[in-house]
Each structure stands twice: as structure tokens, then as C-alpha cells.
Length: 575
Image (cartoon, rainbow, N blue to C red; front, side):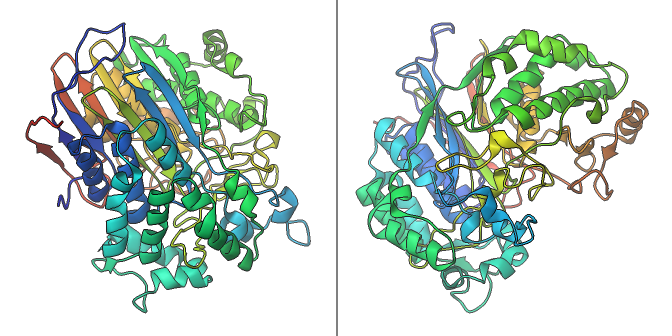
């Protein structure tokens, strides 16, 4: 077993047909980059067994759902950006959670009319109807080659036999234990040994293994109908919530058309609504396109990038939501002419105060999320970001399921103009409604030039969008996968009017120049302007195929505390 590798390059030699506009070529193998070695190993194992990138994605996603309950799981949802090489098409699988019918805005107010933050973040009312299990079934049935019984087998085995608790898991549980230990189903899983999970202990989840087995055996009905569905509904309702069997059975994955646009010599394919990331990414890159950023002094470059971030996040607040419920002016927002108008308002030497851009503040997606990137030797690609929102989601496991439910309802505008868990706000476009999907920042992205193809994404809350932006700019500057994953990060989201930076991301002289331009720069250890700036953010996982050099590269974020490194397997043919 690969104990400490977060990514693996697996070399095969089949043929690729990518796109008519590029020279005939194929990758020298397959690559998987994820946030946990066991998940990467499961994806690689599917490639060894003759599966494709989509089979590898099912296995990788399912194992992450077992080993990263702090970040994602069957009780959550996600977005899967796919490139189907045989059909020559890109598609976006929307497996975002949906609002239960009973979850009206009034449900999240106290008797005095104040916002009930506990109900929005913890327990049964915090949870949306999960989408990830349906995505695994859909991906397997419509794009994979291997049966679910094969692709889910690693996750079932790890859930049953266990895996070592890592530091982030143990620390995160301590942060959330007061909530998690409210619920008998959660206590039965996390206090099985009679105490909270400790680093190095083996953590077993037999109920989750049984739930995964039903999913493998019965497909969609194994989760959304039958015994699992009955236990989920009974557990939520016993805890004071209000789910129905009909809502579970009615959940559907949606195939959507990705957003595609050009940035210099690159074709960018990225996430459409209900992700806010793709439109924001397109706006920022189109605003920045006329400048040769790599030729500018660092302070000038950061200033311009921040001004683009500021304008895109302002539009995100007012225009974006679930496209099945809200009319989104997508054509306008993606127009180069509209970007030119936004660019015209940028002073190249001075910050634009956010309160001069008409409007009010923003909704987002939590940073306890996970992302993985895959490419196979046929040229199929997957960029997937999945989540349960806050640390360990809602904290609620319905008894007998092992399924830790999300708290994505907090990503809706539950009370207009009231900040959510991340100090940001939303309005009517992102208000809850039965079956509606809450706005997200998850931004799985493909990049393609004549010489290179890359898949990238990251967790990180609203910072997902700006981290992907910096990753795209890094690849455009000629960096490789490892350099892109390690790039220093900074972020601006319109409100609060602050540039947040990682520790040591910018030198003191650059920070001083930005402040002289009128920017407020928040560095680790300083307070003000919203959330405290962390030492480091995100967990970028990216793969690239350098067609000019004829090599694959993959990188997992060096910030990831679970482990670091890459393992290269010798070239081999698999039939």
C-alpha cells in the first residue's frame, strides 16, 4: 500500500484522441492527484484494472468519503467536470445538495426574529438532500467501464477495516465535538472506542461500509430508496428535522454545459452555475487579459488581480444562484465587452474602495472541502470538488447509516443581508426553495493549449475561486504542476474590503506598496476586515500533460498535512 503518496502517475500506452484543433498525440499514462494517499491508490487501482478516468473518479471520490469525513462524504455533494475523449465533449455533473421542502427562511429565525445560527450550521435543519451517491452511480453508469461493485470495493474495505486517524481529523473533531456528540448516531460512530478519535488509532465505520455495499449492489435505489433512505429520514426527523422519503427518491444529478472561454492562448473549461466559480473566473481573466502580468512588478500585478477579484465577487453576490430557479444574465456576465467595462473602472495606481461599487456583500462555500484531478491514457479527464461544508458537516449521523450529513443549508441566504458562517451575505437569488441548489464556489477547471493540458481545483471556501485563478495564471506563466500547487495565495472578495494573504505570500515591501495604493492587507496574526487570515489555505490537486515534452506531471498541495510526495509506477500495458 502507498502510505504517504498523495498522487500517483500511472504509465500506460493506449491511444488518445483529444480534439481536432490539436496534433494527434496521447498521454504516456494516467495520473491521479487527491488529498489522501488511500484515495489516490484506489483511483490508480481502477486504471490498473482496465478502468478509465471515470471509474478512477468513482473509486477516488468514494474513498475520500470514507477517510475525509471532515471534508466530504456520502452525506454531501459535489461537482464533477468531465472530458470524454471518445465523444470529444466536456460535461459538468451537478451533484449539489438540494433544499428540503420544509426548509423555508422562517425556519431559521428565533422567536424574536433573529437569525438562528445554530440551526443553520448544526443538526437536521442544516442538512440538504445529499447528491454525492447519485453522482457516483451516474458517473459509473454513463461514463465508466467497471461495475460499482468494483469501483466501490476499496471504500467498502477501508470503511470496514479502518484507516489511521491523522492530525487534522483528530483536531477537527475536537473543534466540533460539542455538536457531534449531541446525536446518538454520531456518538455510536465516533466514540466507538469510548473516547474521541486519537491520532494514529484505526478508525472503523462498519455502518458506512454496509451503506456503501447497498449502493454498490442496488445503485441509486440502494441509497435514495429502501432501508438506507428510511434510516436517513427517520434519523433526521427524530433529531427534529423534516425530511420525506419522496424528497430523497426525487433527487437527480444534472448534466450541465460547462463554461468555456479563452485566456490568451488557453482554452478554459470550468464550472457553470450553481457554481459561482466559473463565471467569476471568466470575468477575472477577461478583465486581466490585456495586461502582460508576468512583466509587471509584483505590487502592480497583485493590485490588478485584486481589482479583478473585487469586481467579479460583487457580481457574484447579486446575480448568481441555482439556474433552474433564477434567471442568470450569464451571456452578459461572460461577455468580453462587459469585462472591458469593468476594466475601465480600474485605476492602475490606486485601490477602488468596495463601497464605490454599488451593492452589498457575498455567499460562499466552505473550506473543509476536497478536490481531486485525474487524466487517463485515453485522454479522459475528471476534475472533481466535493464537500459537506463545515468541519464534519452538520455533525449528524442518522443511526444505522454511517452517513455524516452536510450543513450546506448555511450556503443559502437564509436571512437576507445576514452573514453566514464565513461572514458573508446573500440575497434573493440564493434564497432557499424546495429542491433548489445552494450557490457554491467549487471550481473544477480544465486548461488546454497546443502544448499542454491541465486539470486543477482546490477546497477553500470563497477562496476556491481566487486560488484557481492564481493556478490558471501560474500555468499561463509557464509553471509546472508542482509549482502551481505551491503558489503563494492572496484573496479579495469585495466585502469585506480586505486583501487576505497567506503567511510569507508577499514580501513586506510589496505589502507596503499595496497599502500605499489604498489597499487594506491582512496578514496572519492581524485582525480586522472579517475572518482572520490563516497561515495557509486550500489543498490544490492538479495534473498536467505536457505534450511538447511528452510527459505527465501531477502535484498535490505541499500544505496538505496528511502527507506529501509522488510515486511513479513503471510503464506497463493494461488490457
